[in-house]
Amino acid sequence: MEMTQKPWQLWSKEEFLQQFGGLYEHSAWITEQAWEHQPFNNLQDMLNTMKNIVAESSQETQLTLLRQHPDLGTKIEMSEHSQSEQAGAGLTGLSAEQFEQLAELNRNYTEQYQFPFILAVKGKSTDQILESMRQRTGRSATEEFQTALGQVHTIAGLRLQMWAEERNLYRKQVE
Image 1 (spheres, rainbow, N blue to C red):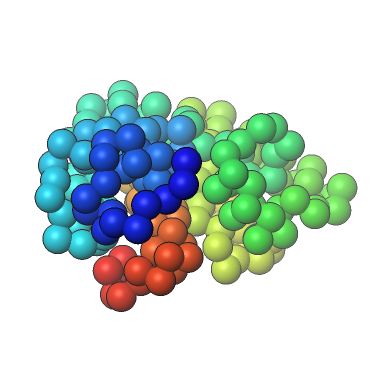
Image 2 (tube, rainbow, N blue to C red; image 1 turned 60 degrees about the vertical axis):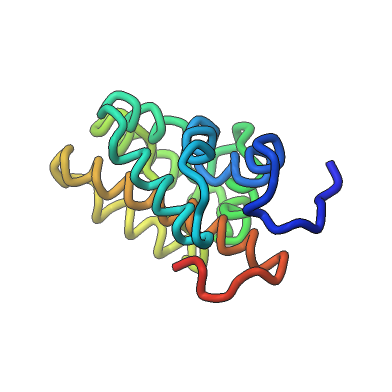
């Protein structure tokens, strides 16, 4: 679909969902609900609305949101956003040893918390990611659940920032 030149605040619901539906991994329901809360003053206001939608959701819905994220470094099919983010962190070119280490950490983490390890990997090296996985494994389930949700919001914010920068809309609208 060709992008129109009208401001994003004036888009149809279809345009809005097409552009922002991928901010939260395989969870366009957040964007659909956010649409109902318009108008937004700016992109940060829209993102805050999305965060509130998640916060007001049941714990089971939040858990489902966490489970939509792929394991880091896996070779399974994932969203374009995740592919790009993981490639940028070097997770698509791991050595066999690094891949096995990451796979084991992923297994241990998922077994302990019942959702995948989630980290906003932009700007992080493979070693930093592995260290973060080691540090976060062993936390209480409640603490890690909240940390993972925070990372989901960070990822959504980074995706929105990239979207805005690609369109020269970034004017301190997104933190």
